Image (cartoon, rainbow, N blue to C red):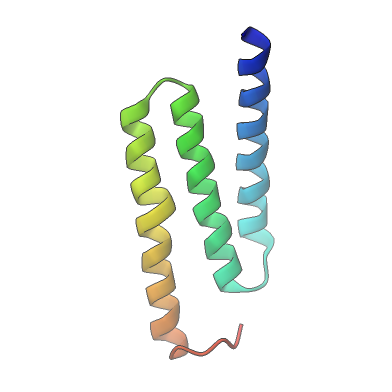
Length: 85
């Protein structure tokens, strides 16, 4: 059981780091917003592994759903709805 938790911790932290690095280095803004949303999902999974389900639910709602939605609406407003970038 202990080895399974260590492997799960390693997978969650690796996914968190990879998605955060992708969010910083992607050229297209919409792709970066999606990577940021995935980072929020991995952060919620990390909180769930750490036995904090209330914080995990809040992070999933805000970090993986609400913030990317606001960013996407802002991108649509700025670009006029086009897919230039």
